Structures are given as structure tokens and as C-alpha cells.
Image (cartoon, rainbow, N blue to C red; front, top):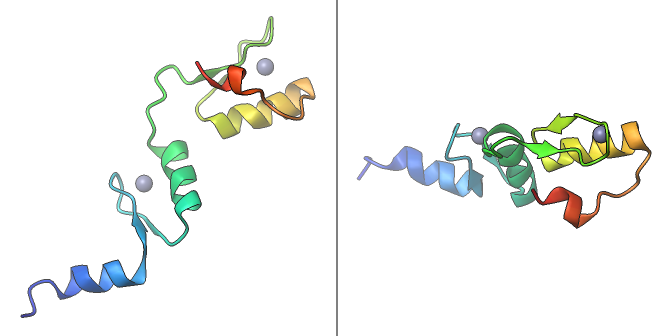
Length: 83
Ligand SMILES: [Zn+2]
Ligand SMILES: [Zn+2]
């Protein structure tokens, strides 16, 4: 009855486990952020739609930061986020 001791303990200790790298987190949002930042294949990424800007972000969050910092935009519109 000791075969799956490890697995059982792991599942009790944490709620979410990253399937790609095995990283474990309790907060689902943290995990979503981790996956999006590290593993989500966003294809060509998220392109900044501002004219003359060739910035390309790997994640939506990065793009949001770029919009805020580079273009002084407070919020990225949903339409911009979708590719
Ligand atoms: Zn991971
Ligand atoms: Zn830009």
C-alpha cells in the first residue's frame, strides 16, 4: 500500500501542478499566469497594434505593460489583445 505515497502527498499539498514543467502552485490564477508566461505557445506572440511600433510581446501581460509604458495607455482593449 505504499506505491503511491508520493503522489497522494503531492496532491494534498498543492492544488495546481503545471503539466509542462511540474511546477506546483496553490493559486489557480498564479498558475494561469505561469503557464501563459512560460509555456503558452502564442504563435507569433501578441503584436502591438500601434502604428510604427514593431513591439511583439510573448504574453498578454507583457503587452499590457508595453502599452502602458511605451504608449501611455492605461488599459489594453480586448480587441487589441486578440490576435
Ligand atoms: Zn510550468
Ligand atoms: Zn507598441
